[in-house]
Length: 413
Ligand code: ATP
Ligand code: MG
Image (cartoon, rainbow, N blue to C red; front, top):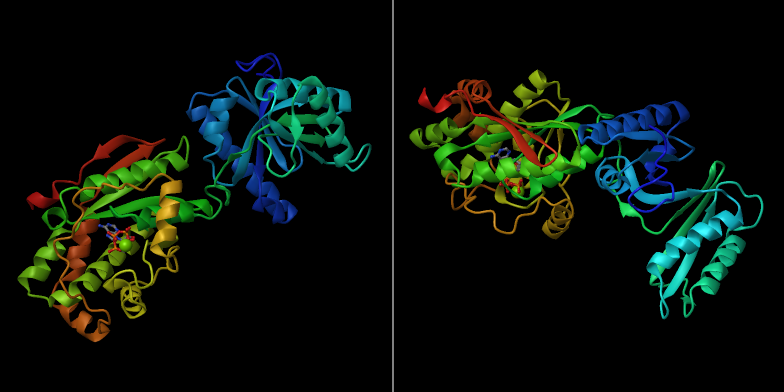
């Protein structure tokens, strides 16, 4: 299909302009590769959503032509690697062509008493300067619509003009996108995803840096609050909105027997949180290999709870040899919550998420020797084998659960 010559926005030629940021800093071959991945992800996201589109890649931009620019912009603004998107009109690059388009766009949004500004950028520094062009286009708008004022600092309305070697682009808004690196450019990571606030944000942050992710939730069965599994599945579902058009998988492993064993063997309650986290890391490290992931990700945060003191984090890390990424390690809770709201994973009323195995006084400095002595009595390898061999799988795409295969009747054994 060709460029959209007629859209529901009128008779002008509309397209979606994509800006990417950091990719620009790469060397030419790496940049070429990353832009190729970004294009592949954009095309996939659009075609999976039933949108036909044609892409062009002039220097520093991706231009997308299609019949539904608003829908295209909405989807592409959730693609990692994209900094922002604008729905533009494409014009010639002469001042007359730019003025005419700017006036017709301004006429739809400006009326007497409003202030406005024109921002111009030129790819090639020839002809009138950006400032001269801005003044010329601003005057034309001012002449055309009575009662306007120009305010370059806090205008009611802004028009952006880009003069590029292929012509002009005129637009009036920039839709923010997540930035980062294209999905898949950094390999795979397995994320320990809980029902909480932190691990979804951690997952989003590693996705943003180009990792393909697979989630792992440890289902504590009757030791977990009544709403824990549903809330973890919901976190997984929400995160799938950030990889438009792609299936995202969550493994669900049965960890109920771990708590049963700790109870039966009367493992000192203060050590149970650290033993539990070491167990989660062990199961995750084993599954990482099977799933082809290169790193393990958690939402751990220095000093947030007793199990996350530096001393305990180092005892937890000792259980595995794989790389463990903790994107939130230095975040304040408020910073995490702000980001969780922004990426729409925050839920103010998540229900009963209490862990029934948490003691009143968990150790803040568990001794590795003591932990190992306890673990030796527990057949940890058998428990890990059970958890990693009894997996459920939940598949999400574009904010919907599309498949839910429960664990293989693990609890009946
Ligand atoms: P979050 O930290 O995600 O808000 P939380 O507060 O319930 O959840 P913590 O006790 O802080 O969990 O655990 C630290 C990290 O361990 C979590 O960020 C997550 O990566 C992992 N984790 C905790 N519980 C589970 C679980 N049931 N399944 C998978 N991973 C978990
Ligand atoms: Mg936490």
